[in-house]
Amino acid sequence: MNVKRKNSTISVSIIIVLIAGLIIFNNYGKRQEKLSLFYEVTQGVFEITVENAGKLSAEKTTDIKGPVLGDGENVGGGGFGGRGGGMMRVSNLKIQDMVPEGTLVKKGDYVAQLDRTEYQNTLATAREELTNLQANLELAILDTALSLSDLRDAIVSQRYAVEEAQIKVDGSQYEAPATIRQREAELDKQIRKLEQTIAQYELREKKILINIEQTRQKVENQEVYIAQLQQYINNFTITAPDDGMVIYKENIMGTKIKTGSSINAFENVVATLPDLTTMISTTHVSEVDIVKVEIGQNVQITVDAVPNKSYTGKVISIANVGETLGNSDTKMFEVEIQLNGTDLALKPDMTTWNKILIKSYPDAVSVPLDCVYASTDGIQYVYKKNRTRQIVSLGEMNEKSYIVEEGLKPGTLIYIIPPEDGDNFRISEI
Image 1 (cartoon, rainbow, N blue to C red):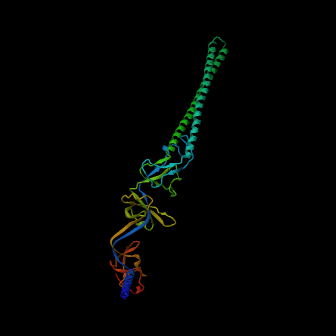
Image 2: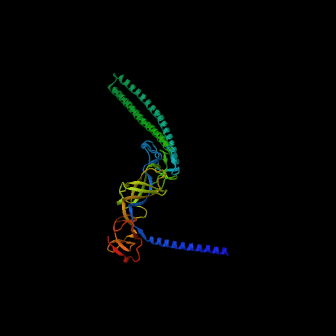
């Protein structure tokens, strides 16, 4: 019997405690609900900012380049001719292999391999042409010896003919005048023939020597061309020019250059090595807000990939010409922000959020935008908890709040949502 009475007493006590708790919780909830209808006017730092997303990049980068067309020599690309003697079609360079983006490399480390196939074929063709040119040179030298030998023999024979004619003239001094004139005419004829033979020899010799020199020059040019082409192909294995992190370069279409991509034989940049000690956040500001932005303004930056951490920086560049981004018709202006300090956790292409500080008021009274209302004649006011409509004089605004220049004091409670009977509130002048 005593046990039952004891249990009943405990049960009643528990019920009383629960009821009391419910009453307290209900009253607290009503009190919180009531408080949530109001906003307490604050006083403190008030900032006007322009905020936009952006992307990180290094202020300075070193290009990792493929083979370079050297000193104006016509090798390694297309439409070439000139000193090297080769003639090749313009051709892009295909990347056969490249290390993953973000790879840390030391100076001289392997970065990429370009496809040699097309240029190896060109080199083989050039070597065949060199063989033909060398054969032509040997043939020209041999032909020179034979051609000039015949002409030299003709000159010797003609000199004998002149000597014989001269002897006949010398021995005809006692001959009849007609015979003398005939022999003198024959001498003149043989002399002219000798002169013609000598002139013919000199002309033939000159032509042959020119032909030999031209052929020899072609051989030398082709040898230079082959040497340069071979050196060009040797450079198809690309190494890092310095220590750093490999970052893929974007082409003019905005697509990253990687394994399987092609690069222009003249621009020939495969990737970059950014200097991570100085980073730039590039953002775009609308044509409405860009008039507020000035070089030198302070910026607060957060990075999606580095949560719970913020950075500071300054505006260092503002574009003079706007551009249309995406499907928007609004003109956007590129703004560059240099981050202060160094953090090696930051990498190129990371997404940033940039808060550009336009103005800052250290001790401003402010209220949310949604708490301020305007009458038909443009007078601005707020609803105070004491059931008055307080007329206010407002200053500057940011994305969330107004500065209140007159009409409110810090700590005043004002309605967040207009009360149903707000029209009955007494108007309070400033």
